[in-house]
Image (cartoon, rainbow over all chains, first blue to last red; front, top):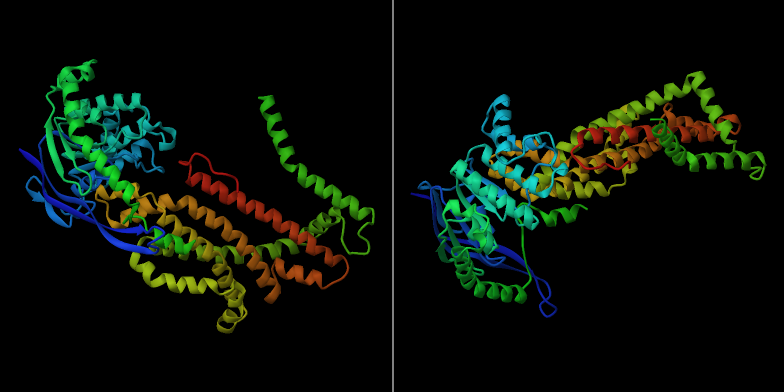
Length: 293
Length: 262
């Protein structure tokens, strides 16, 4: 059963390109970030998108999250078009994005407050999810008192607490050291089994994608489209075995994905060298900030 | 236990060393007559005058008047500038319409408003309080605006993804993340306010610590010493105010790793 369906998604960005010495002065151009993405994700599936940096993976995730609108195309969740964010989707970013003025439990409660759940029940639910991510006893810690891995656990608990059907994860383990990353990957698989969520996972690590996913979609260099989708022939039980990463299936999948990804990475680097581009962030009014200081 | 107390005493002594040396040097230089005939009293005399003023009740009377003005103006500024700063920093439309006006008004020298206020509101308390409010307002406003514009976009994104209303976004996300920078503005605002308080009381008041200073400076004799006494007194008040602000900041920002003593 299809849970998320993206049809011909195109997304454009206005950019300020700082011209080189020949071409002084700023020119405003439009940059095609996504060039028609088609993708279906099944209910309860773990699907990862891998792609070279700057290919528009995160842009796509934002679109599914309803944080931005596509210029063309539509995204459907359970057959209904997405227009705006909602509590049916929980998002986890690489940057943790915890509210630093709230304790761990306060962070997990945040989404529940939007759901208008009473305080007592909120605390109960938040405690349950903190214990699901292995953070019982850390309820009253502030984010600055937590390690990177623990922060990301809180962020995962926060995204799960209001019980969304879908978990959107944008390189969630990208900022962690490799041991912590492996531990959290295993934890995520366990949580996925326990909660039966549909997970859309963005990563640039092929290894991570193979380890976690039912299917892996490869995105091309900008403008991003889905180049290929690869099935990962690993059962959920096998993934918890210690030597899964050296198993034949794992190695073969990784090899296949790298073959598909390689030329996109090269292409992306060429694009990167040719132009240095700044995508203006809609949330951050940089120009206005400068005027005031 | 004992060593902890000793350690704290040592720290206190270290922090006071420079001040004690300056006071001693002052005392010695004046007593030795090196500065004669400049009418500079000894440090001990300056503190003595302060005590005399306190015993006579004049110090308390004028302090209450001055601090009353500061408190009224400062509170008004906080009440106006923080919401205004949140609005201007957060809503693009607000910014578009208000920014040019604020930028222009900000360029008018603060004290230039005083005659304008006097013309409109007379020379009473209102003009003084308004000027003090204005002095505090710019710092608070600017620090609030820049704090809001520097809110971590991922935090905003996360909150938005959880479907918060615009009002909750301001109340539960933007305001709390802006608090530390707002406090920086509050501390600068206090300095500015004291400056303006003295200007106002020296220019057009017959009460308040600034007017006492002007009175003293016009009277050669022991009254002149009050100029020094009041200066030192204001330094002490300023220290207390700063510690209170830092204390409040620590309480509100206990989620931050460390807040420096500004």
